[in-house]
Length: 245
Image 1 (cartoon, rainbow, N blue to C red):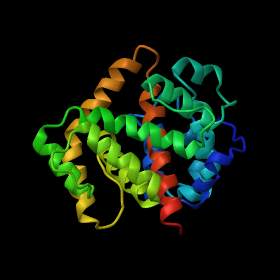
Image 2 (cartoon, rainbow, N blue to C red):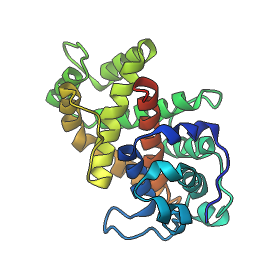
Image 3 (spheres, rainbow, N blue to C red):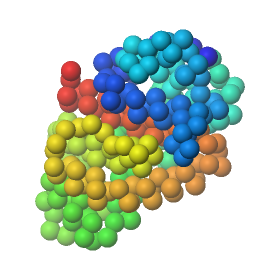
Image 4 (tube, helix red, strand yellow):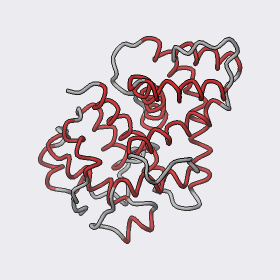
């Protein structure tokens, strides 16, 4: 059984909604291909899970412990069983595997945003000119001839200027990731323009993830969990910052 260790970077999960926590729990406990339990998961066997499921807020410490214990890859997961590592270590390890450009001295939030930008960068490179125009319009970016580089620069500039821009980017990317991996998107309201961007991004994000999986499978299949888990946590953090309960 995974043992919870205090992790300030994940304390905010205690205030997250069940609609979001269920995605993280499902990712860590079940294989999306056939719905079977993951061999390395310990959460569903815990007393708190059995007592409180599906009220995930009631056992958020157990969810944190599962994130910590998964570690960097399947071998490390076995060796660390019951011990766990800080979420920031899991995040940085996933970023290293994805070749994300980030500073180890940056805040956890900024490292997460750099990870999201890496997924977006890979996705934009696979878009057609028409898709780039549609995506830019959905993100409310005014560019006459949008290119992957110009869109990425515009989003980075917007993020530096506004927390809402970071939230919008996170919603678009992570909702697409959740739909591709778990068969359901995020519950984020009725912001129509974001829905348009999510639709355009669906294919390219899927291709980007496939590329990442091919690169990480050699190092251990647990990256199929830790990478999207970090993306889901990044979304929940942005939601907590921009839409506090």
